[in-house]
Length: 494
Ligand code: QV4
Ligand code: CA
Image 1: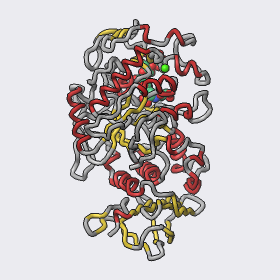
Image 2: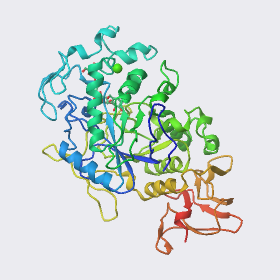
Image 3: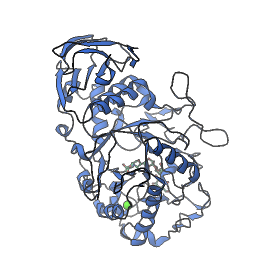
Image 4: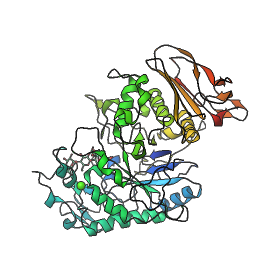
């Protein structure tokens, strides 16, 4: 685990995960050992019926009661307890910039049945009234964000019609802090702050200052929650990610967009250019960054990143991108765990980008079944269980803290690099076969490639790599291989 991160305002150290899994929409009945999981918003949200129950209704809160399509508060508590007991930490996607959309209507069409009226801005379950919203501070003609070049609009007006909370108010700050502190008392380890760009950094800082330390039943006394803020900064806007470093980590959206271009070889990019990946590419400092190949928005055309974003739909390229991310030392990494939906492209846009999680006919979310080959059923993709991705998470943990070493490239799309004397990875993203003898930096011995297979007992189930007494090894990778890369590390040595 990386222990280098502590927010500027933290009282104690925060263990930051080497790799976080993002479980989109999964129900509260799953636990697996040895990971850090970010879950979809657990609090009450509006029920959107047109279109029917889209995934994004969970980004429209109605109250801070913990009942959602993923389950009840009791089920959420049970999951967090069971996860913490086996060292799996849960991070919550926290929607605190806004409530539901202005067109949300009035009634009890909400996941716990709390009354609300979007027109009069009344949310009985909190409660909030019209006094707790920002419209008096927004000066655009329709109350919406119209120009991302105007800092005041971005933070005080409505993001796609979502009723914007007045976060400078002591009352509102108190309600949000109570919500987050309830989650902390249940055992949650930290938060993704949704739409952080739409909140003043000082308001976020004030709310963080009200947060309790993590529950000492599972965490050392004085441990602060891990905070990562969703700020989309691709350059060229009035608000920059750096304004948020003082509050914790920040999403680095350039990462997935640029890595997608490189792996796809678009815009003249090639793998050899990854030699100075990280700050050298204009990214934020590594110790501030939360990085990912795709997220729940840009895997379906929402949010930022555009067409270059790699997703499970293109699994070969996706595995190359995720493996590179997990092998490279930059940032805290997050891998997706998604569900499949039926896409329908009309003029290049997926008109089914709204479809929610796999559901039963009564509207309940389908359970995540596990197939004989360890993949998931019921249309859950479970990228985090794919052998290549799961094994690269183990690779990352194995090489944690090791330097970026022994870079090699062919000037094109064959690259290799090591992590000190603990791990080494080689990619062939050319259209011709690769045969190269490279300096790995690893101790002599026979290693199991953890991509084509893994070490099981005293044998490799996939390719074997022999490292000589000088640390060199020969790598042959066919350009037509399903996974045109090889990764070896000291915990998969025979
Ligand atoms: C519509 C109209 C508006 C109108 C409004 C009236 O478009 O003009 O004013 O009705 O009520 C959904 C619909 C959207 C609708 C809105 C409000 O798609 O059409 O507005 O609801 O009813 C997710 C989805 C959004 C969705 C939202 C709320 O992506 O489509 O909006 O949830 O359900 C920027 C931000 C960044 C943001 C990113 C998507 O800087 O912060 O856009 N990313 C986060 C989340 C994302 C989420 C939100 C923010 C909002 O990752 O998933 O948006 O919580 O880049
Ligand atoms: Ca705002």
